[in-house]
Length: 535
Image 1 (cartoon, helix red, strand yellow):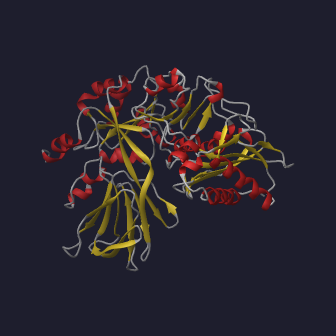
Image 2 (cartoon, rainbow, N blue to C red; image 1 turned 90 degrees about the vertical axis):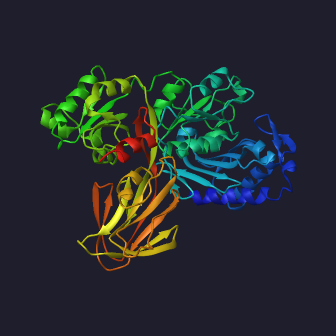
Image 3 (cartoon, one colour; image 1 turned 180 degrees about the horizontal axis):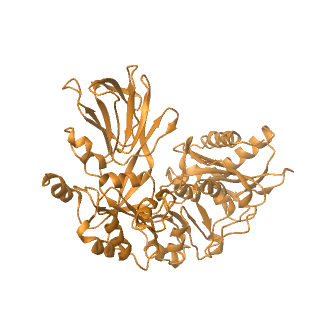
């Protein structure tokens, strides 16, 4: 049975063989004409030979479809769809952006079962098995939800590009063409880009199955899809003759926007969530509903029950934007239940995260509907305890004693290196968003939300030498409870989890984001108005 390990071993063989080429200039020597009618470079041929020899030596039961040699029928049911070196011109130029691309399956793209990519310079490995998800270097990868104000697209704009490709580039915030289809498509699969587009004016310069086979399965297992320009799901047979323009996306709405011209904002679906403990919750909700007349919206079931109308639980809403009536705690509660964009109506006191004042609901919603806003993205913090991921945090995760007036002993590790020990009531792991909340009340500094960092803040430490410190957001922070006494893990003040003594909890950057809809006020103006000048 062919497995991912088999494909990894094939990639090893390729890597070993091309390492024998003495320099970059020799890599590009044209030594023959390939089955696709284009010149074959030395690096391509050596990589392909390495694969073919491996298959013969190890008696691997696969046919081969390769860019250079074409189809080799070895009498088996499954075929290895191979691009020995995708991005060979990058390899010749010394650019660290080329791969060996391996896909295994039957008949066509839709019949692919296994996929494997290796960046032959960085050694990053991507793989997928149909129905079992997609991975990069052993960690699951997923496509991302689009932010249409910040679209990042891998877009072919070379010599043979159609004029539509240049028009498309003007519709997005960032456009790149890096010369390696397999890796560019993989950036969509791992949530680093929103789309991969090849719109060529020349049929012979369109994509072939050998270019994209492995990456398409990777994308599909990561939650995305690839389409032709008519919007049909792309399916290509195992041959070198058929080619196609293609648009791969993490979310279908990006295709509809880029190719069909569908306005993603005017078609927004809205959710309304309210803190039912507010005395004016019903009134504020009615004002939001009145302002949304003519637009599709849903009301959370808790406030809907009080109002005697039909509702739906927030977690079940399929919406793009949630309008939140309440304070900062209500916003945080919403962000634990949805990945949609949020905008807050301040029904509390400070409302640091809210955008609309309770006295200006109609004006605020009107501004939302006419798209007069920006989208501010904040990263989330993920907590791993007792063999499972807990809910993500936008503000902070904290560990504190479960007993009144009893301190605990903690060890703090950063990337598995002991950073400090402390005796204290607890420890806060704060994001920049949370730096203006609990962390600040303990004397820690507040951070601009554009800073990619985490802050470790002691709570009522026994020694004055126990200080807050800052680490990169990509760090893994581990908190160990040294004593055989219980603690409590609290996530954004919403979720409490019992933590047993002599155990550890890890905090890492989440792959999900919080997206706040903002009007005019910058971060420091918000600090002055809502924190410095507020009692």
